[in-house]
Length: 188
Length: 296
Image (cartoon, rainbow over the protein chains, first blue to last red):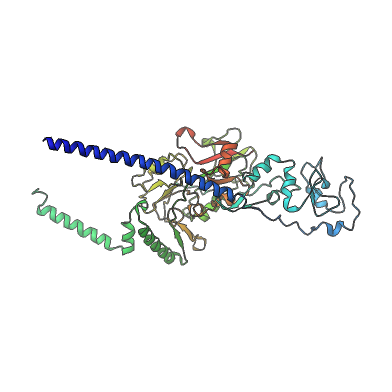
């Protein structure tokens, strides 16, 4: 009886020691593993941060390059209603039209460039900077991928769309759409 | 003991065995294999490979084109989250049909994983007075806003806890999935889901062969059969390859955002940290990973 009692006790102690060892060793390796993994993922992510591309500007139509015509005309900086040329743009222009006209965004001399309020010239590929002059909150959201649409990979290369892919710069409000058909009505 | 070994019980058992053998002999070996298949979570890599090979052969025979079925597991350190901008959505339903197309949902009887609810500005989010059958000439309609609802991918999902066969569960990347082979069609999960996000195949699903998508995931858009439940999986076949879900890419106003909640640099984390965010039916403590926010 006595032997048996001791044997039981020894067995219990051995089991307990094992359990404790197991528990503590698991715990430690687990937390080490976590930290390493998290750091690794974030470093990779940060390195990846630059692989985002602005897409080409949408086709600018037959009117481009503007210099093809404007190089042969005397520049006229006077604000006026255009009648002979670009009257189709004037007709649909709806972008603070009371206070703005062509030369607020297009440059008078360098006709194939856009122009910031500061006088800095921009290519059409960077038009988002021009939009961002007034719509700073939208530009901020667009840069982090919240405003506008992104395509590609949630964990990798993404494709941005420029403001002008979705908004007509002369009339930026979204046009209404015909909705897709509603779900069928299930009859009981 | 004696009673159990009686002649009566012997005859009973023999007749049962004969019946079972007869019933099973009606199936070919592959169907029998499928019938006896373990739960997906318990399959070994080898078994998964074999099952997938059989499925690809079966679909090829059925639809006459090549399929690729993936069983890709969750990506490490990933927890998927989704956010939808309520101030942008115009209710055009393009997401609904992109989802049907990508995920091989039945065209007849019709199954839509996304329901777009039209709500009145004056009433706010009010499910009782919402309308999914709106059909005007043009959207958005004045005085209304739109709230698309699909599976909310809850952290505390009621649908999985009620499943009697454990045919539905949460994957490590947070996607709630269904093993269509284990679903017995009891629809308990549909009763448990407070978002109406689960859909039942009342009839044999039909998808035109030419429209059938061939990049499949076992837990996602592979063809279903009559009598099983299905739901949004964040396009598991795309998400696990790093791609955005279909609805994100089709949305014409960019209202849909998707990413990894564990990555502080992700779009989804930016939204949670900087925008006004809400979840649906918060009081039920389902803890969705699908967020709604106001971009403006």
